[in-house]
Image (cartoon, rainbow, N blue to C red; front, side, top):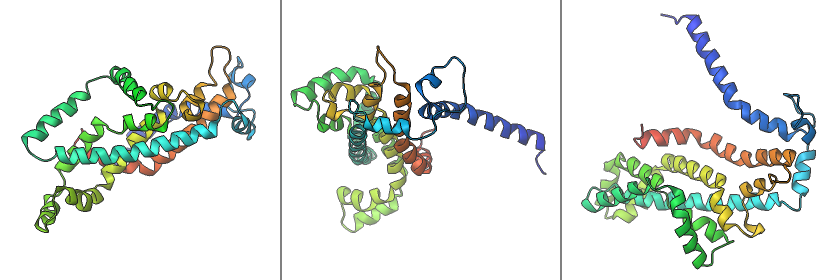
Length: 274
């Protein structure tokens, strides 16, 4: 029986309306990135920009007080290295916690308990530790403290619980132990969950603000989020460069998400999270 056209039309209308509401903030950012400051702050609202061109982008790149290119490189290095390290460490921890024994159950309980602790509570002791190691204004201070994620470990653990035991048993029969089985059999067949967790870690690391603010005290180690905050001060707000920088900062995250979104959905589904 063919569906009635009216309900179908209403569903599509609702989807279009929700999509428009979702995309509206992104259009405002894009519109302001191609507008002058007077156009943005005008009393009358305009849907279209008035300075379509690369003038705002050129001024942003030529701004010596805010090294936007250097900040983009810092964010890219921190996000990529932190993502790779977190995926590897969390996968190893998740595989260990997937082993059915009393020790793994206790460690799983402790790992899940850390999820209940607000991140702000650990900032002070982590900062003191990083400061005592001399990692202030360094890539080590930005990357290493965020290389472990309890949530990523839990997601990997849930995924490995449903991993085909036949493959692991075949590796054990060939004389491989847990370590070799993980690197040769388990991890190469877990690219979906690795991409899903990696996407979440990359986006979180790229958008991080408070921790880079504490550690990146030297201008040469500031990330893109800190660079954008320099356009917003108590004396003046540089709207064109702020929104242009926001567009530049969004592009890498958008590309990563669009490329890996199907793995993100599959990874969450196969991890057993409802």
